[in-house]
Length: 318
Image: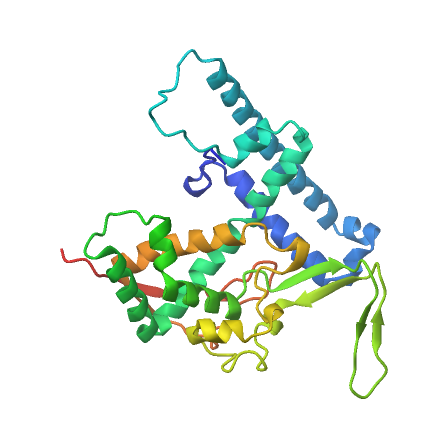
């Protein structure tokens, strides 16, 4: 976004807490049909609490946008001239939105809210579970580390570039397998735009009418034994190239699919590869708990029921 909001250092605990609480309230609303009746939702107090946190997050986003708009104006009015010989600095996404004359302030806020609300818990969930699974499977962890050693050698300080990230083939398979077993968003809801027929082998077909709201259980689709030979095991070979090409396209949908799929899925993959490559270049990981003994909690964002308890051992030669 081109600006720091210092969430990880406690600079904006109010925003972070509001985002977390909104996730809890949305999940509570989704799984409690009684709350779908608006008076009951508000009489319970949850509706008013939800509205309060929505106001808090949207006001914070508006302040971020306004501060960045002021900074852009300050830079544009500065007398400093750019050196034509220097490469042009890439424009931050928020700067691009602000400079886009076709977008209103509310349009910009909605785009920023999408990235800020959906882009941190989901990615951290994927990274956390990937560390946990690789800590349970030292044979796969060694393959990841061998791949990283081939790319970086003994250089523990070099930042991975785009070419390095493209070469992390097996790490990507491990990330995809992690997202298959523990998708950060295990359930998604959709409103049908047309009638949908669900065939039944022995009974009349079921017709879901247009306008109906449905919940799709992604976590079950990703464990369908018709498409995955070891559905309940961490088996990165599920994503060997030949297996991927022979599989039904919609059998792997951790980011959803269609026009309303995750807009940040490519960025999320690059982010996870970057973070995990740093961790496994520096450390070997041992998990103290195992899947499926510790089944993750199915909430709006999938979470480990008892946290992910791991031991890190330094790989560097001190």
